[in-house]
Length: 410
Image (cartoon, rainbow, N blue to C red):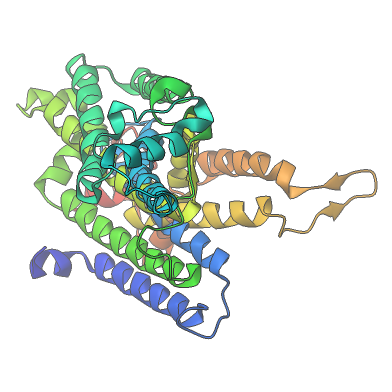
C-alpha cells in the first residue's frame, strides 16, 4: 500500500474518508458515546450492514473482476459466523456452569465443568457430550484462526476440483450453489455437532463483558465492522489495481487467450476464489455476534443469490458499486420487512410491504439488468463524463456491466 498506489487510486482515499466520517457520525449520534439520537438496535443494523458490504466486496472481486458467478459465498460468510459463535457460546456457558457448580460442597473438577457445558449446549438436541468439532471452542485465538482456515480450506478444495476440471459459466454457478445446499442440509442434522436447526444463539452476550451495556458493545462492533470494511476495500483495490488485476480481468473477458499466453488461469481463479471466501468469512464472524443467532437457514442458496443481486444493483466491476448496492438494499430490506414502511390501502387491496419486498427486489434486479447494466455505480460514470472509446466498430468485450469501456481507455 504505497503512496504511489493511493495516488493512482484517489477513490480509495475518498471511500476511506467517507467511511471514517460515517463511523464518527454514528458514534456521536449513539446512546453510548453521543446524543442518543440513534437507537442501539439501529446501530446494530448499521454494523451488520457494513459486514454485508464487506461480503459484497468479496463477491464483486470474484464476479465483477474475475468473471466467476459464485452462488455459494454466503456459505463461507455463515461458516465464519459459526466458528466465532462456537467460542462465544462455549465461553458464556462455561461461566454459567462454573457459577452454578460453585454452590456445591466440593469444588467442581474440570471434567464436571465440561460435562455441564456439554449438557447445557447440546441438551436441546438430546446429546450430553461435546462433539469433536468443538475441540478448540475453549480458545478464542484458535477459533479466530478457524474463522480463516475452515472457509479458506473448503474454498481451496472446492476451487481446486472445479477449476482443474475447467468448469466454467453457469455450470460452475450451479456447482457452488450445490455445495452451499449440501452444507446447509448437513448442518440441519442434529448430529452435525452444531445443534442442527437450533443453531447457535445468545451470541450478542460477549464473554468477559457482562458489565458492559449493549449500547456500548454495539458501537464497538460498528467500529470493528467499519475497520474490517476499510481494510478489505484497501486490500481488494490493491489486488485489482496491478498486473494481477489486469490478468483476472483478462481471464473474465477471454479466458482461452489468457491461457494461450501462458498464464496459469486455474491458479489465478483459485487464489481469487479462496481469498474472497476468507473475506466473506471475516465479514460473517463480525456479523453474527451483532445478529445474536446463527442457524443453517443462513446458508440457504437464496442468501448467495441476494449477494449477487446487491452487487448487480450497485454495479459490478466497481468496488464502490458493490458497497453501495449492499448498503442500499440491506437498509431498504430492514425498513420494508421491519414494519416501518407504511402499508398502502388501494381500497380493493392493501399492500403490505413485508409481503411485497422480495417482489420489489426482484423487479429492481430485472430493471437494472435490462436498462442499467452498470448499476448505480454507472451514475458516477455520467458525473465524470466518461464516454465509450471509439473502437471503429470493434466490440469492447462480452460483458457490458463490467466497466470495460473505462478499462479500454487505460
